[in-house]
Length: 544
Image 1 (tube, helix red, strand yellow):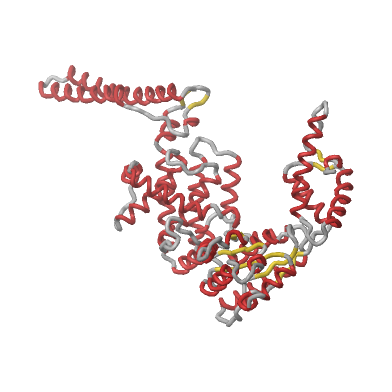
Image 2 (cartoon, rainbow, N blue to C red):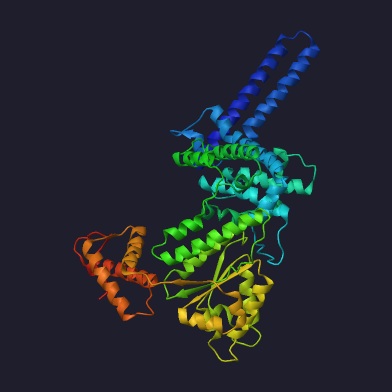
């Protein structure tokens, strides 16, 4: 049904209902005029009749109704729903969202007063002030962002991005504006009427949109961390946890039902939220175990993880712990998973509370060394600033020391060493490259030797492991490999390894080979009279 026509029918329905009611009252008053024997009574009845008549005319001429985003709930089989459904669609959703947001506000106020909770949030949640990186957000700003991120995550998981004009966003909108007004006026009492009025303010809109950009920094990490609610995960007591979860589930249900129906997908996610116990899956450890091959690397990192976990427990019990260096040297040929493992290590450091953010900044010589005198230190410091509270990964780090005494790479090394000392609690550096070159690089500078004492060697993949990597890529994009392809693939990889021993590309070689096979397969299928199987990879698709 056309939106304009639906709009008109909605207007006509509401006008008719209100007009009939006031018209009926008007008729009663006219009967009173005729029935009254007293002049004063006739005048009073006539005045009331005129009043109700004017209201009737007002409804028929002045009422304007806009079609809400949940219009599907108003129209069934091309006809408007009954008055009860109309009221639920036009009036109740915003009221229900307001009540849900206010309920969450009341519970969160109690949770946020807990000192332990505030300390946990400060430890676990890190937000970068992108407008002014040198200025950190206050504790209150972070708490505000955390609860808003929970509400935004619920909304997104139910299939609704934040949009100022969508009714599904009004729960989060009410909460943010309510908190903004509370800050302006310390004794502000939540009022839907006041908050609705504030929604139309350009200043408020600007504040809300700035806040959405901020909270998306937190919400964007939820899926990677395996969490559904930061507040629930960190809430200090079981009672507050359950109260908050109940309120959050009610909020989710309200959003899911706002269009008049709750899909099976929405129901499943709400049930998942109800069943969640707040435990965060250690995804970094899972990702490490899921990697193909690299058994020696997994064993070494697992040992290091166990050691760090134990030291953390000792610290929590007030026991002394030896100083530990978190910086690492990754050695091995290209394509052996060094960057992937560095990213996993960053997550492990984050999970253990060693780093606040746990993000990875990947660079090489070109990102650190400038062309002119005095610019290298500035360039290197800028990169390090981006990596603070995370891991700086320098690939082919040995190239920084390969030039002569006047090479600017040495200036980058000196700058890096100084920042590693100055920001030792906020920065972890992992350097990577070929085994022999990296050993020479570390030995070239006493400062590097003292800071890097943990070496992890990445062996080349075996032929079988590279075949597994190829098959994993094929499965990801829904390709199948026939038997002839598997046999030919093993021979092809063996031959390529013998030709490039010492500088073999490993997984990088496999990725390039896979892409070339897809191109050859496309040419093969295009030359066939019938389309053939567009998802089948054959031995003929291997490069010649």
